Length: 264
Ligand code: PEP
Ligand code: MN
Image (cartoon, rainbow, N blue to C red; front, side, top):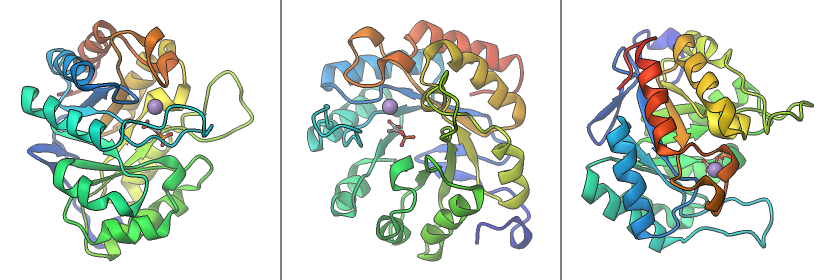
């Protein structure tokens, strides 16, 4: 169902009015790794919007390596995202970790993220196949492009054709970066599938200093969008501060992107 052969034209996924894919403008999604409170997320949402971002990201259920690390605000975090949407009009993106919260996400979230660690959680993918909401499917930490496309196929086979793919870097032997950004997926995914592909340079590099260069490269490579971690005080962030951009840097990145292609 994802195969370009049987669907030559690009799919355009409508996320509560924001169109992703096709020859629409390149979308830029910004926001913190984790929602840290209602005021916090509303403030960042305003900054993301002022910079030109068209969607807000924020994790409420967090897949953390350590069970002792902050696990996310849960429902309270989702409701804080809803408040931020009310204040700014930005559609919201958040990660669903397990199918038992699917109703909450269908009710409140505009774009449901499947994180890298759940790319092959087939029960979760099947459950998402049954809902009528766009899904942002991240590539697994150590998954091939074929496995990733098949994960999208799981969602689409259930009837939900609204899938956006997201490359967020893969595990390699390299230690200078958190992951290795595989930008070759952009032309490969475009050749093999009709689905939109967006790039997450934050998780791909783990280092805010590398985010701008990789974002501009992604735009040049033909990506349909970017999802970038933004925090007003990266040093104080509850998760992923080291890879988060301050709002001013996020704004200047969008400006530079506009010199390359049609960005938001
Ligand atoms: C995230 O987007 O905050 C996240 C945990 O991403 P990934 O699943 O790509 O690690
Ligand atoms: Mn993160």
